[in-house]
Length: 484
Image (cartoon, rainbow, N blue to C red; front, side, top):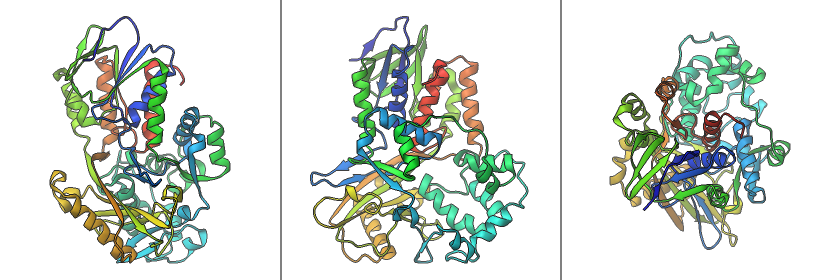
């Protein structure tokens, strides 16, 4: 039984032990104002969607995010944390000159097409596009800026760069990043630099060349400096990305400030004289402040009825289910080398893309004998339409669909020697039109009602690993008013 009496000290409860909750707790630990942090995770493991299978023969398979980008303030921030945790010796970098960075494919009209990666390829017509991409880019400078507060990604790109690019490239990109439909997703919330570039510079191209507004200032540590010097495009860890939450968990355990609770499902939270009473299945926890890293819908179901307007808005943030199928084949079976290929919704609604894991991260192959590891991503915003309810779909059906795609897209005639299905339910929040104002309104309600509550995690300010970690840092800075 967990029972904790509130004393006049800074006790903060963090709801959720995924990467968002762990990162938040890490930043809280570094703050002298915080005496105690209580992390409450409903499942039997910490790390959330950062989840790796390490097989006894040395092979590593990812069931969630795989490569993490080092770019920008949020990328530097994550690398600073990785360095602080002593993981720099575990880093597997992929540079921009690596074939996995240069070669990315689209599967359109039953064929693989390499996406242009050099200036010369922008000057000529490259299938599946019907005209040189440079023409779209050049004419973009002449497009008037929108006066709308928000716009779908598809509408934004159609308007500025043409419908063909929106239908093929951007549709595929949004399926790869958000497992979502670019006709519904918000450009302002999903790609803030695009929206800001148009608003501030009147053009995407000028925004990229001249900058599209202020960005957070994060001083790069030696690992982040190395990533800049060596021109990294992405990185992973030797034992898989789950090493990051594992190291964070160990750091928190050794800090002397943190209580970590697994299988501690929050049933209800109620205001108390000193903050909150958090009701679990087998007891009550008291805290001065709560930082929720739960998915928005999960938080909505435990808040008191006095928070009705907030509950309603949290319930409006929907998310999608993705089937992640890891496949291992004997030998070298790929007809092309690169990072992988994406599939636009016009080609196949159920299949989002295939990652050629062995190309960027051969270190994750089993050390003896040549093998090829692939990950097939399916479903997303189209899951229910193609596969029916997630609880009813069988692993056999998903594996059959994945291997059939590998056969038809890549011409692979052999069967995989190993496979694993991870059905990631409600794993990626969908930032639909008006998401930014919804989030501002939620935080406004919290402020106006003086609720000792902070919102962090992928439901609000970005879905990437970097965004989620940075969101935890921001929540701690805003709460305690000091640098981290």
